[in-house]
Length: 287
Image (tube, rainbow, N blue to C red; front, side, top):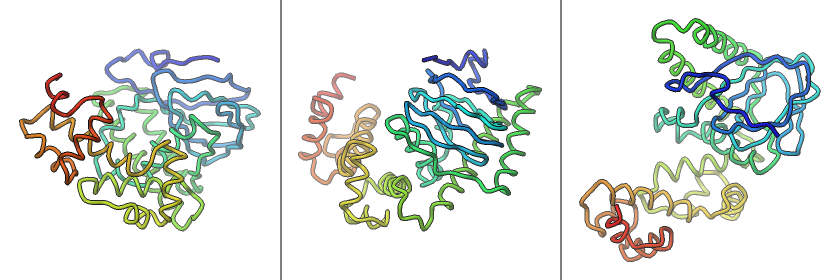
């Protein structure tokens, strides 16, 4: 299996981003991206998409993200044209909290690529013709900017890339409203709710109700996608915040536990020690 690196496509270390049209007349070899993610928009035609060892049919309007560790290839292309946007995952960190916690963003850019690495997961996003035309025009402008590299092109490309991310995320969420079968959108709703409210007292019933599913189903999809429970995920969010306080503040351990969403400092210490193998006090001393 081949391994692709971003510097094969661009030598600009200060701007690790590449965009191109891809015209495929022949099958491609199975490959993975070592140090970048790839956003793929199918502009015309059809092909078979191989992910790991599984195959699925893709066509005009399909959109999906492939993370670096996921092997994939195309075969049996028919009039197949795509746009490849290759980027470092950190580029998405410029997204504001309003986007990062949106259901569509979580599903398309976080959960689908994560799950696709482990399973043959077919993208749920398929753009209708009017929306694909808008995306096609946006892509054309980005490729023109990338080709000419005029002053400020990097800033403009980042801006347009994020516009594309927002547009696709919005449509993903809109497309899946009313769908009772899409586990990803239910999971995205629960994640967004937890990330918005993890400093508050949350119950499984509240999280499941927000996602529109039962507690049993909530536990099942967390196990399937994250190999953990909703409560463990909630603890992780709180403990990550506690680590930040331990590094960057002089707050007491009790104060940090409360500021991180734990109502009981003893329980906080037990959970912290279980996760990091040392007490919060010892963790702070090691810094």
